[in-house]
Image: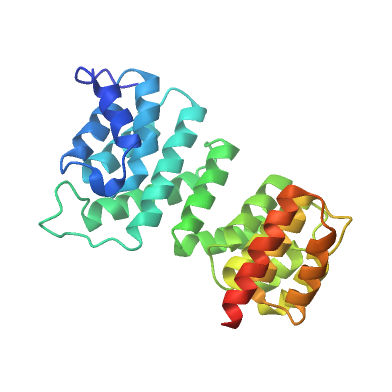
Length: 272
């Protein structure tokens, strides 16, 4: 844990940033986040970690790397650090590096250092399994090349946690249509839910008809039906609008009714 003491009122400043939109931040907001990450108080660091992914700041990246290596109190805090790194990696995919007019922005070299650290964490046999699972998720969200191979290996294991991580990763990575097809029919309901979300995100059209069948299956639990409905909205199988309109008339579940309405609205937009 860092010995640095944040300036007076740092928690208040962090709270103010949390409650404002990114475009409303002052130019030196990254200094506040850095001060929070350096704090000796865990609650203050926790606030700063929630803010860290909102932009790609050099100083913030440095502090995240420091916290992951030897600054965090325990694995729970290290998981929060990896989540912050994951958000920064996703934002970095569309970030313009080395632009002089962007105060505090990370350089391409610093960002690449962050990417390399996530890969090392995933491959580190000494790291806890939750950390390695979270590193895989971060790598997939960033579309990193190594994450594709890692997800493929994880999917072929018999470990439920790794298979769930792989199914979640498929939503962010191309080239896994066959595996997504396996996921939506898996014995594990969590994997099936993740599979349908991936089918929607990657627009796996080969699963269109099956997505409608599952969306209309009254035996399915709410979350799984909602995930299938999400896929229906993106894949637009033939006859979906008529079938879902009929299902909506007899639906008494409020959450499912909302999901049906959202899917019907999306299908209508697709037809326009």
